Length: 370
Image 1 (cartoon, helix red, strand yellow):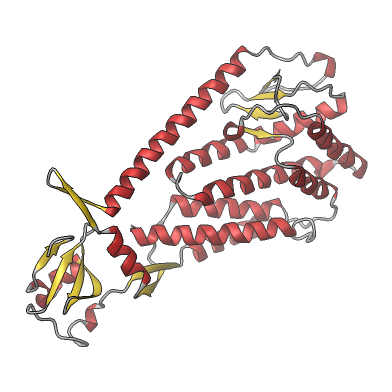
Image 2 (cartoon, helix red, strand yellow; image 1 turned 90 degrees about the horizontal axis):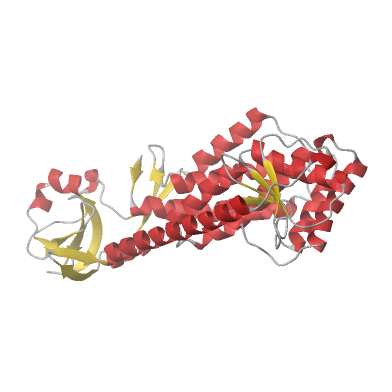
């Protein structure tokens, strides 16, 4: 594996592609029975995988860019200032902003988590005996100004209920739904994704995908819950979702730290209701899903875009390198820009420089100084 600026660009490109495909499939879910939550979950996995592994692999095919990427690279290596003998380029400036933004994002996340943890700690447990519910493994609390039942906490999960008068049947659906979130480790996925957002806070795709990911998590939970229900019971479950929506009061936001029973907008709730009432949805075996996941990983890491470079076997064949009118400009990442007659030609690597005597004869300048 090899990391570079261009491999990061490739991961962002495929992130856009994955997001678009998943959004399209989400729109088709209520019209095509062969699209289910497991297929959509694969795209959740692929999106996160590409962000965690923005690398170039041994089988990756390189697509050369002769115009756009060389100009982008030239811009990133543009010299801004020298600070205590340290050359500050556009790339260094952006990297500093990236780091500072990530630290600030981490501070906000920890601060909000501590506030929510304090709120949960001072809220009394809800007495469930009258409902006859088995809620071993998690506690239940009622929080005013909460818009929807949610589950929060990793080590000691807590189901938070809004102040709504639920029937025994409705409460059964709600607690079963939240218990599935716990057993599926959905909160671990959400927390893990929030830490990825800390790294890629500047990428708007992260926030668009978070909404889609939450939607898929809810569809997966709904699918598991209704698997053993009759059509009438599915209808009751859907009506419970609608009841929560209709009785919503002023929102207390637990967004980054909880999974919600009645997640999303009214349109998303309508979407979930249709999904719940849909019958004969196709099921996929784990080997099939595994093959699709591996294929997705391979395809999403198969291409990388690189600035045009000189191949070793072509050096000296297509043009003559002389030290009279040609020179090299050193870049921060052990690469060099080759200029011929004052015009940028290609980027060469440190290895190419060391292997070619003609390159070694050329004068080498620092970026911003010639």
